[in-house]
Image (cartoon, rainbow, N blue to C red; front, side, top):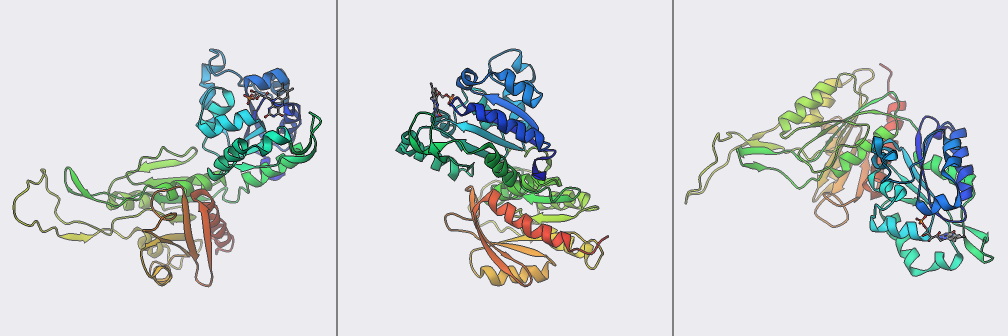
Length: 405
Ligand SMILES: Cc1cc2nc3c(=O)[nH]c(=O)nc-3n(C[C@H](O)[C@H](O)[C@H](O)COP(=O)(O)O)c2cc1C
């Protein structure tokens, strides 16, 4: 399982009878070359001693977020920050409910809230608990958030019942973790992503902008970093926190965004233009707030720099030119416009995004897009992270077939 090597896996252990199997899981992660850190619920410490996990992982175990010793290094945030993957095994019925509610009442739930990485749940409980509507709803809600589950397996349970409820075997959980961590196929590559809207000032208190939230671009930056890339994220004004392990440059206007991209473009391997850059800006920006009058107020607009086209132009025909991915947010003529953009901006791939309908485009955690390449296209629908994975899969293939520098 080479995917585990060099990654940091945080193992959250819940208080169920299967907690002893989490010891074997920790051992498998260590054997696969991962750095393992363990967080336990209070109930979990009643089933297996933290000392066992400390010995297996070679690191202190987080069991109490209110313990001054454990909190010396902000233990309740430290694990979430370090994690490439959070695996919760066994995920008890109680823990699933607390995770769904967003509680932060112990080491596992707090770490889950503070992490910004994929989460794998391995539920284990009595067969009737597993089939209860409450547990079903909690699992469905967590899956809708993009969290993955493995198991439970079916068979004889410790309590004498038979059916689904057994913790999946540690080997199976480790294999699911490896799948979720995915390949480090962007390692050694530099990726620049733009995200969010731009703001083009009219006067010191007014501007032209659009409703982009930056979520698609932030998901791309996050997933590219997870896949090993050195990532620079050039973000317009959005309310999202900096993704972990990503260099973030915050800008306001299209001109500032173009300058920041230009600064970073020298050794670029992949450029993804996910920002909704304003095509126009007011030609004259008033130095003071404009006063209202009873007359109409004409506003003359002038073009902003075309960031995507200038990347395409800068590297046209050069060996080792970066792969360029553009976004086309359209309200009509989706595919025609995407194909036009592919050619006119010298893009290798255009992500066509129909905006102005629910379930896609601006805001929301999900997206529905068509990936349009010169000869093929594919439809992708899912969380913005899943869409980011599909875009990067395509980009990696293009990078692997690129003319060397
Ligand atoms: C012997 C024993 C075994 C248990 N096994 C499970 C189990 O497999 N799954 C589960 O959801 N709860 C199980 N429980 C109940 C949990 O321990 C209880 O709900 C606890 O509050 C879970 O705490 P946690 O979610 O913070 O770890 C078991 C309880 C006992 C006494």
